[in-house]
Image 1 (cartoon, helix red, strand yellow):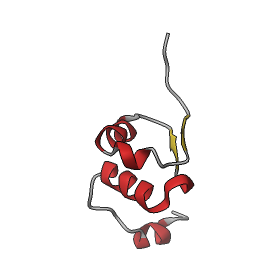
Image 2 (image 1 turned 180 degrees about the horizontal axis):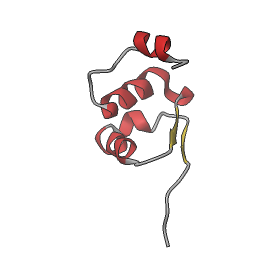
Image 3 (image 1 turned 90 degrees about the vertical axis):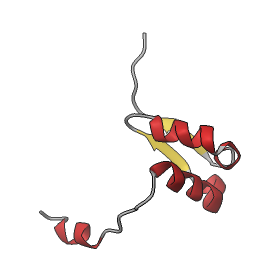
Length: 68
C-alpha cells in the first residue's frame, strides 16, 4: 500500500521486453548493465535478435541459476 500512488503513475510498456532492451542498448550503450535475476529468456532473445546492439552494452550479471 505504501507504493500505491507511485504504481498508479507508472508508465506501462506496450511492447515486448526484447525490443525495450535493444532500444536501451542503442540509446545508452556502455551505460546499460543487465542484471538477470530470473529466467534469462528476454536477454537471450535480445542477444540473438539484436547482436550488434547487445555488443555495445556495459555488461550482464547473472544472479541465480542452477546447474550440475
